[in-house]
Image (cartoon, rainbow, N blue to C red; front, side, top):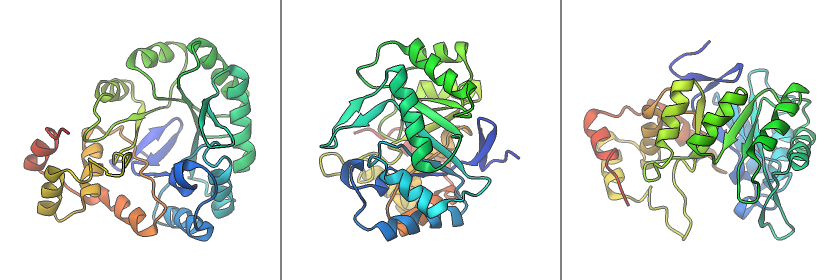
Amino acid sequence: MVTDDTFPLGDRSVRRIGFGAMQLAGPGAFGPPRDRDTALDVLRKAVELGVNHIDTAQYYGPDVVNDLIRTALSPYPEDLVLVSKVGAARDEAGRWLPALEPEQLRSGVQDNLRSLGVDRLDAVNLRLTDGGDDFDAQLDAMIALRDEGLIAGIGLSNVSREQLVHAVQRTEIVCVQNALNLVERESMALLRECQELGIGFVPFFPLGSAFGGVNRLLTHPDLIDVAARLEALPSQVALAWLLDLAPNVLLIPGTSSASHLADNLAARTVHLDDDARKVLDTITL
């Protein structure tokens, strides 16, 4: 059943705040977590609190995050939707490498199946990066994997509106994952396109990032002022703003802390009034 708190992701229905598992690995999503038991506890707590949409990737670690998910949650709850991604790989130093050739996409899906211990993934995002030019060949590979029953749905990540329009002419797309937050709004038109098409839009970096040492979104004075007036955390207001944009927005805030997890999930209870929207809609860096 679809409600105000849920939205379809392919043939499944997920709650609009899920969990992004990338931060459970070591720094830079590479290597083991600082505390494996804490990482396992966060995953179990997420499901206990009602999360039924977990975003992951075999190349987080590599294998580390998927191993944590399998250890913490397998056998998986029936309503749990596992979404992964392919299109990248890591070298021995943790550098990100493109892996967009059709055979690499197939290998990536197989690696996810193996590391998560499942026969089929609910959805897999084709994550576009520099180094892969033949979008149709990549779509062909994903369609073949779906037709073989290895994945239930095809998603796209880091794509343009033009690429989405082209893709939906060829096959069903169940979700799109692009950067979007209060201060990064380049994908707003893509969100609206997804809304018109009934496709779930999954913002990555929903709370910005701390590249350079400071998260300029969460420390923005206007956001801090709105949060204080609403008696909420700046992070909760930033997530509430995304939820307020459109009913097809599906959030996957990530954390390695159980307390931050609970804070993020509580964002669904934050009500933005007109004054708050007016301020938040005009935030710039």
